[in-house]
Length: 329
Image (cartoon, rainbow, N blue to C red; front, top):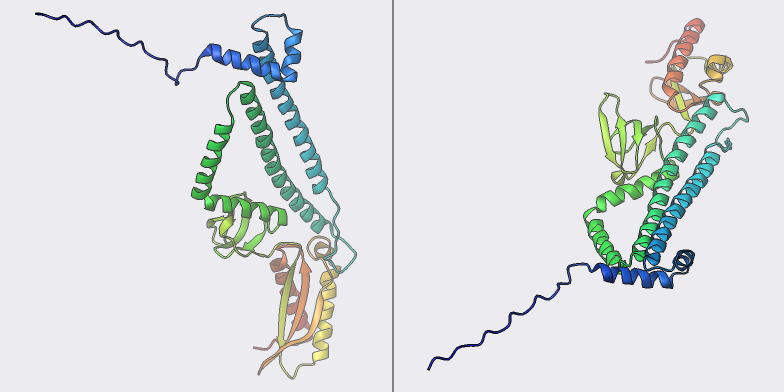
């Protein structure tokens, strides 16, 4: 006997969770708008219709974006005002011995302070923009009923992973921030950072660009700089050692060197533009088996000590020749 099998019904496909249900999203936005006082206020201004909550949510998002832009502009204006005031603050002059302040040192210090203030202001403006717009984006996502808790968790995990992978980069940025805040060096300074010695051409939060005496350009990461020797900060000092024989009249030599130092100080081309304080003529600085060494010290503008030392050598040599005093070997 032949038995026919009854066909079994084919199961209908069930909806997968990967697709977004538009009706569900609209309902969630409507419920969220009802619980939001701002969105509800916009809903009350619109006609009683099903699309009113959606339009009110859109208006609320637009208001959030506009408020974020306004706050960003206000923060940038405040930062610019503070930076401008910091760049224009008067000098204290505490590092100078004399009360007189030369125009050259004032202009140099003002330019240096201005560069540092502008760099710090740029960093603050970028940080403010990221914080304000980041908060606005999270608020907009919440208005769109997109859960931000998983997003924040994912961002935190990614941030930790990037932190482990970019430790050197983070170290460079932190070191660059402290370097700028502490004003360790700036563009135009002659510095020794261990890895290289040269003139600073550019300073960023990540690297410092130097050019050495041979013209070679060095890129030094800020995180690798453990010590800085700055030859151009505040002021420099020029030294000149004058060796004379033991049988020379020491009082005459000291009087002659003092006269040369006074003439250099009275020279308007140097006193107003290069030299900061009156030169000092010390006594016998060193003694050897063949000579006594006198020393002249001159405080100059940053990085001008070499030019002053060259001029001082010429004047001392001419004065010694006129007085018939020979230099010791």
